[in-house]
Amino acid sequence: MVKIAPSILSANVLRFEDEIEALKKGGADYIHFDVMDGYFVPNITFGPQILKQAKSSINIPYDVHLMVEKPSIFIPWYAKAGADIITFHVEIKEEIISNIELIKSFGLKAGLSLKPDTDIDAIKPYIDMIDLILVMSVNPGFGGQKFNENTPNKIRQIKEMIGNRKILVEVDGGINNDTAKLCIDSGVDILVAGTSVFKDNNYDKNIKELKGE
Ligand code: DX5
Ligand code: ZN
Image (cartoon, rainbow, N blue to C red; front, side, top):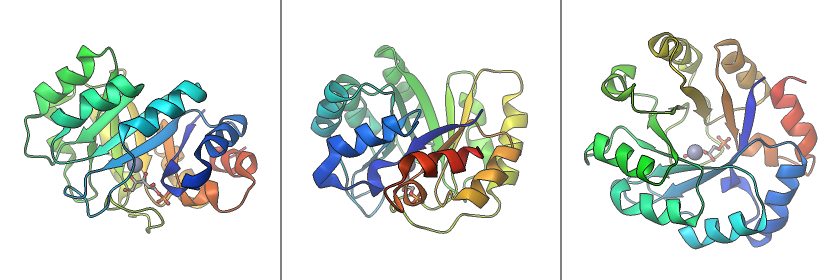
């Protein structure tokens, strides 16, 4: 069964605690926590203090997506604040291996993400070190964008590359009931969804529909 990671980028930030609580009650498997540095992407989001308070209040796995140019600075902050999975982008200029090792040094799951235009070969050299691959189906930076139609195909190719390794495949951006189905049919393990979960107050219904229930 596919897992759902609602992206709190679309939550009401003034009611954060209630929002996360409602997502947990509604059947969310993870909370997708988008971190932006204003440099890797033209937007800024949530600092580690917010994660720390969320984690101490609501116990659910926190899936941290770092859209930052220098993960080596950010990883310790978010690891100490309570992240369960930390994912960063393969397009950064910093060294990849030492950042994966840094995440692992905190005992956390490490993920690598790729933008829609990045070839899956970019992930290959690190495949035996990672726990998760986050396939971006929009250009990172903002919620509410249109799903890139090549994504289901890319997910299939990534699944083939993974073979029998234990690596989760997660997709992020433009996920609604239709695009969710395409990704599920391609074998994705986790759907990130912002707009489609928060479109109205029925988080449980929206999560169920994304799962195809
Ligand atoms: C985009 C973020 C996504 C975003 C998805 O940069 O990484 O997690 O919140 O939002 P929707 O589901 O609205 O496309
Ligand atoms: Zn994200």
